[in-house]
Length: 317
Image (cartoon, rainbow, N blue to C red; front, side, top):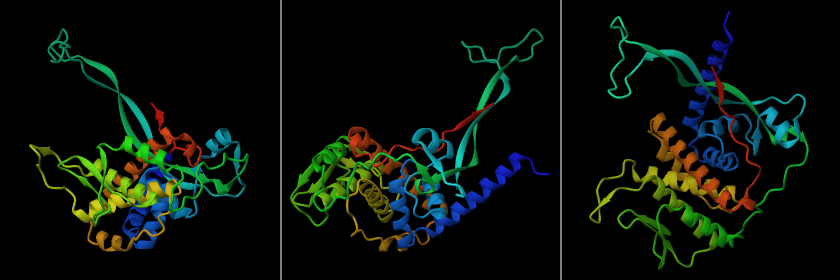
C-alpha cells in the first residue's frame, strides 16, 4: 500500500511531466500569445505554475487557494468546482548531528577520548507537493474591488506617471534621440537606453520596457570603454525574452499591443533544448513580475487586482 508521501511524489512527477510537455508545445504562435496573456494576469506565479493553470483553465484571470478566497476575499468556491493543480514548495527541516568546530581555529573539537564531538543541528531542505487553486469564476460571494486600470488606447492614460515609474526601475539612464530605424536600443558601452522621439505614448512605453529588459538581463561588462565579452545568448533569444516581457507588462496595465507579432517565435524555439526553453520562460516570468510589482508599488492605484501570491511555503520538522 502506497504511503501518502509516495502518492504525493507520484502526483508531483505527473504534474512535472505535464509541465514539460506544455513547455515543448507552447512556442507555437497562438499558444505563446495565450501563455503571455495569462502571465500578465497571474504574474505572482512561477512560469511553470502559470502554464499549469493555463492548461487546466485557459480563461483564468485571478486564482487563489480555497482558504484564501474565504478568509481574504469573503468568497466561497462554488459547489462542484474542481481545483486547478499547481506545484507548491514545502520547506522542511530534519534534526541531524555534525562535528563541533572550534570557533577560533575552525578545527573539530575532540572529546576526552580523542573522538570528535558532535552537536545537534536542523538541516533545511525543500520539497514539492501538489496544491489546488481556484479561479475567481469558480467562486461566489463578496464583490472584489474594481480594477484600477481601464483599457488604454494609443494615447496612454497615466503615461507620465508610468514613464516615471519605469525610469526609476531602469538600471541605466534613459535618453531620447532623433528617430532611427530601430525604435530604441540599449547601449552596452554607454550603459544607457535610447528611445526615439516622436513615437506614440503606447509605443514609447512598450519600447522602454523592452530596452529595460535588455538592460536587466543582457548587459555586458565594459572596460576602458570597450565591451569585454560576447553575449551568452544569441540575438534572437535576447529579443524573444525582451519583447515577451514588454508584452506581459503592457498587457497587465491594459496597454493595447494587439499588433504584436508572434510569428518568429516558432522558428526561434525549434531545435532548442527543453532546459534552454525553460530558462527563457523563467527569465521572462521573473523580470516581468519584478517590473509589474515595482510599478504597482509606486502607483498602487494602478494595481489590477488584490495581490494573490503563490501558496506560501509550508514549514515542517
